[in-house]
Length: 494
Ligand code: PHE
Image 1 (cartoon, rainbow, N blue to C red):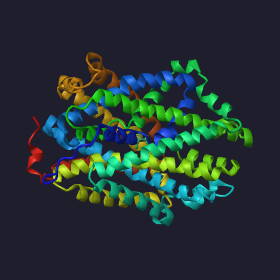
Image 2 (image 1 turned 45 degrees about the vertical axis):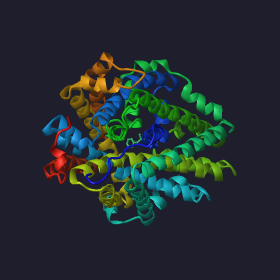
Image 3 (image 1 turned 90 degrees about the vertical axis):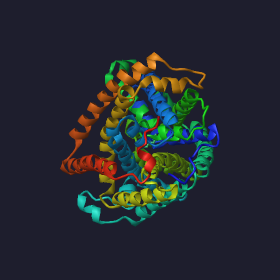
């Protein structure tokens, strides 16, 4: 990015808010409550907290230390660590970019629901409404030739908003948006949780998640689920923390910051799940539907179960409904800009693009790919992308990063960087976690991910996954081979 001043956060608070915004996303709102419920309820907090400290915070610290030390993009960092490692950076960034293309689409669906929620326009059968009227989904892959205009418009709107944020300088774009949206998000969640606790049946809901099932602790899958949630929720391995930390001024307290971000993110998801389960408790009591049938995650929870709840909630639903969908929208936008920032940064640095130019290129390519999800076959393809990229490709990327920073790079340098200004320091235990324990745990999750992805796949999904695999192998090499237009790119950082 020659010619442009290097970006730097204007305050530590801006950095912390942007980091929390990147972590708090759809995963916190609709993934965590279900993971908690299906893995032993209250007792799940033990593997969850262990994973948070031992693995989650440990890996965030690696990203912080690397970003802060090198103060540059992932592609240049990996090139500096070893000439041959540049393709790994583009591989990671491509996964992040592809995840964003469908994440934007889900946030786009949510935008439609923000509007619908004022009048409860989903009618008396939200299930059919979602699949037939909103998604217009067809069972066959031929649906890819039918565009769904409302979804396309909404996806384009989210890409446009992301472009507006990314093209603006760091503090006026990502910084300002985080400072506005995060406090709003917190207020909305407090209102929703406070209201949900007043509903009849609320206690029968939230006690379900907190009543412990101690036998679950003996099940290794519960531990993997806890670790998987931490990877997803803290957005590990997506070069987000690394990119944001590279914009920190000298003298920043890295370890302290990492702890604040991790605790806020987990605090948010635990607090939010009290609201979600109180509302489901109310639904179970009022409708007579067994609690088990209501507990679901993802789009089923947000776009089917919650509209059903708002239908029976009475007048309060016209306030709580829009607030609920706004909450997902805000959490989604702050995550999208974080996902894209690292991608844009690497492109800017290698090809000497201005911030505006890289944001424009990334967002145009993004909108084109996302339009695949705005077709009749969109939600089916989205499911395949999600299963493959999250369960399989991203975990592989985290594993590679662990090996590179733990084994190829001189790890003691990172220890020194972290301890420089922090009140809380790290040492040998951290080293052992990153070098050995974390890779083993990720390998466990990864094998489980391959198994579940392949065992549930039909021929169309396997074909889509094969295409994605080829793209993920070829494109990083093309990006590596393309000559840098910034002479400085091949000068290794000392
Ligand atoms: N951690 C965020 C979330 O929970 C962002 C994220 C996006 C994580 C996409 C993984 C994939 O939604």
